[in-house]
Length: 333
Ligand code: ADP
Ligand code: TRP
View 1 (tube, rainbow, N blue to C red):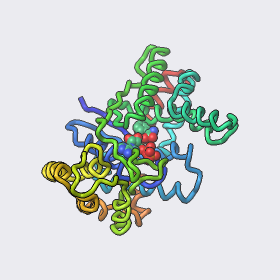
View 2: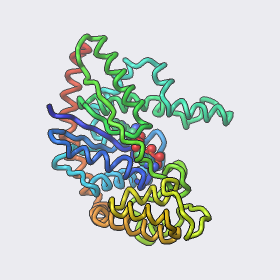
View 3: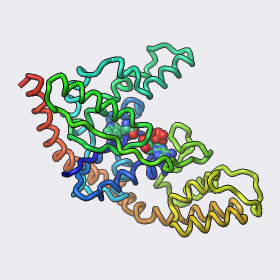
View 4: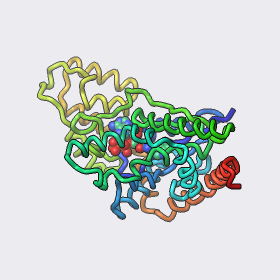
C-alpha cells in the first residue's frame, strides 16, 4: 500500500540550521521510503497569524521554497505547492471547524501559552497577538492534512498535539456521518537528539534570536560560528562533548569518523577556537552543493512561482475531489 506523507513549513523568517536538522532533512528523507507519495508545502497562510510585514512575508515564502529545493525536493516527483494556492483547503477548514469543540481549541498548547503570557503581562484578551488565526490554527492545519488522505505527518515534538487534534476532528466527522470521510493521520516524530542548540546554547529558534541562517554567506557564517558561546576551560582541559553546544552542532554535519576523532580530542584537550574552525569546515562542506542550488533559485522568483503553480495544479485536483466527497457526505450536493 502506498504511504502518503505530508508536511508543511510556516513561511516566517529565514530558515536556520535548526530547521534544517529538525525539519527539512528528516522530512525529505521520507521521500525515499519505497512506495510513498510525498507532499511538501509552504504553510504561508499559517504564517499570517504572526507575520504582518509585506516584504518579510514575500521574502520568507521564496526562502522557504528555495530551501526545500536546495536540499533535494524534486518537484517532478514530490507534490510541492503553497497552501494559499489551494483554496479547497480553506473550505475544508470551515467544515472541520463545525466539527471542532471550542474546548478542544482552548487546550491547544500554542494558544494556551500565549494566553498565559498575556495574563502574566496584564494584557487583556483584546490584544491582537492572539488573533482568531492563532485560535483556529490547529483547524487549518487539520485541513492541510485531512484534505489529502495522509498516513504520516513528519513533525517536531512541538507539533504532535496538532496532528492529534486533526485525528480527533476527523474521528468526530466520521462518526457523525458513519462513513470514513477523512483518513486518520499519524505523526511521525523525529528522535529527541535532533534538537540543535543555537548561539547561546538554548534551542536554536527565531524567538530566541540565536539562529544561524542556513544560507548566510561564508564570511557571515564564520562570524556566527565564532560567536557560539563556550566556557572558560583551557585548551588542555578535558571537556564533555555531550555538554558542548559546538559538539552538538558538529555531530550533525561531520562524518562518523570525524565525530569519533572530535570526541577523543575533547577528552585529551582541544581549544574552543580549533573546534570552531573544524565546525566551520564541516558546515561549509555540507552546505556547498545546496548553497549553489539555493543561490541560483533565490534570484529567480519567476521560476519558483512557476514550480509552485505547477504543484498547486496537482494538489488542487486531489483537493477538489476530496471536497466534492465531503460536500456529498454533508448533504450540500
Ligand atoms: P523557530 O523556533 O525558529 O520559530 P519554527 O517553529 O518555525 O522555528 O520551526 C519549524 C520546525 O523546525 C519545528 O516544528 C521543528 O520541527 C524544527 N525546528 C525548529 N528549531 C529547531 C531546532 N533548534 N532543532 C531542531 N528542530 C528545530
Ligand atoms: N504548524 C507547523 C509548524 O509550525 C506547520 C504546518 C502547517 C504543518 N500545516 C501543517 C506541518 C501540516 C505538518 C502538516 O511547524
